[in-house]
Image (cartoon, rainbow, N blue to C red; front, side):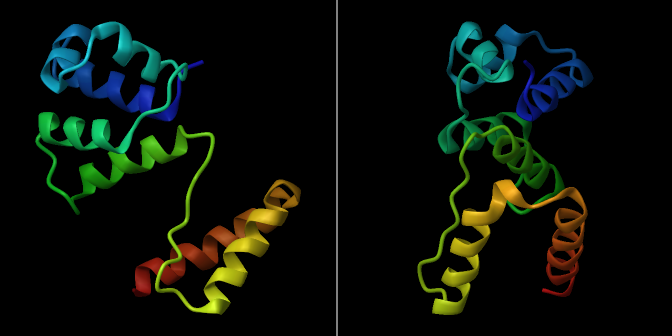
Length: 123
């Protein structure tokens, strides 16, 4: 099953006329290893995301870098939320969300995403 990071990387390779082995060599891994990431058999690491960003010429904070990070996060089975330095209220919200996450319906998810995306644009 191809993952979001797999789709992203394949598109980049096609757009740049690169073979899987070319990209793998450029980031210091084997083609077989990179293939397992693309197909979802292995989780991508933060270190590998950084190496990919450097290889692809993405600058941190840029739109392409953000798209790469988003694809990597969307491909993970588990997502962490950093709460260090956050208020108790922030931590409560994160815990409540994680407890109920699997039970949230599509319409509620759509409303939550609208609120969060609106807050991101304001910030």
